Image (cartoon, rainbow, N blue to C red; front, side):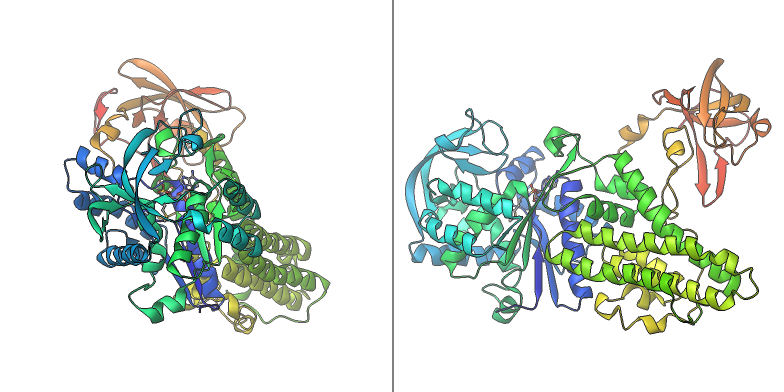
Length: 640
Ligand code: MSP
């Protein structure tokens, strides 16, 4: 049995849904865990995939007049593309329509049927299409689905049942004697509360006359398997169950099934009893995380308040998004997603603290030591204090992995970053550089700050693989060394730092200008590299009304060095806008120019000035240029 290896899973996502931040969160969390365990030197397997059978998919395919499988083949791509974009390092992507999985489910069904763990009976129940689950009359809340509150349908038919109820006492005992089995502990208590009621048997079939899209029951061709019974088996079929014993024994039992709190019962009651009946050992931990909320409401497609991860990545970069997801949510609890919250965390943790630390060390080393990280002298109290803060981060991070409190581990690393910034302020290397006898001390200070960056970047590599590799390349590591740093080798790596030549970097985390954010401002990309954007329909583009506009007058806005107030002429009518371009254009240079204006933007109040539109400008690095037209054209002309 596997005890040393680490095997992590995500729920398999309904292939029908468009992935949103909730899906992205679970998958990034699993990826970060997998990367950490690899970094700690553990053999690791990471499984994710899609749940492709059932009524929802059948309905969606029918609406599109498509074959069910062809529909799945098309929609699964959204998940695969997003995971690629997010840098997800899953070892396998399982689809429940994969032939091997269908075969395993079929064999499990036959085996359980042969052992009388599955039987046929008449059934009356209430079915929720949204959750694909049956409920008894007494489960309903005000006649609606107890899980999601939607309408349920009454269904009466012959079906096959799994003898789940007989495992109730065993399961109660198992949960009580295995404190890490369901985490956080309050979720174990929730499950025990659920098990206080009588536990019925589980209906595991659907007559084909009602639903044909599923795995056929091998002992009755008129039925297909219930989608949850099929889906849960992915966790074992995905690692060789009934196909390759060596592979299966290597990875099973899973170390951690990551799930959202809404699918707790299926994982904490159905799945363990199914495994028990199959004589398969229990997973070590089922961890239920909270929800991402907007306001106080769950984000979900049906509520129309979802954050599209692709949009976030386009705007802020993959790693900043990964960092935010990991740092902002304390795994068991709910968290709120807001753009302001994102910008605040990005600017404080990444731009001000980490980005600034690198930029200081880089500039000082380039200016004073030709970029070469010096050999340190003896450590004094300041150095010892800094190194204590840095050394503390690694064990805290390891503990946070074990206790699934990743946000706390990240916080410990950020504390080390803050300690390094304080250290620089205290030791003032910029002054040491000017002192005739400051050279030796300057060497030590530069080395220690660089060493803090080396350790911090190793510890944050699983969270921000690209940006931390970039940081490490700035410290003089080769691209291969930069991305393959291991926490397990953190201590032994220190010797290799002095003597490396630092490489300039154009700013790891450029600050997001919050003033620009609300102003009719030029592009506010957070990162230098513009990632490929999500494709849009022509109708989406048509929503934006672009017109030519002539600048009639321009002046600096009061209370701001960055804003200009512009009066425009648009087909003979005056328009006033405020734009964050003062850094690049003097008011006098602008008058007479014909620019491109987003004319149907809702007016906004920017620092006390009303802005009725937004001009277009191109920005790269520190350069910004207005978008103008190629030759004479009257104002008010449509651009498109
Ligand atoms: N197909 C089932 C899982 C089968 S696993 C054997 C399913 N799929 S799902 O696509 O609807 O949801 C997958 C996961 O996304 C669930 O863990 C769910 O909790 C999570 N999230 C959906 N919305 C969420 C948020 N707003 N926030 C965080 N995660 C949430 O259920």
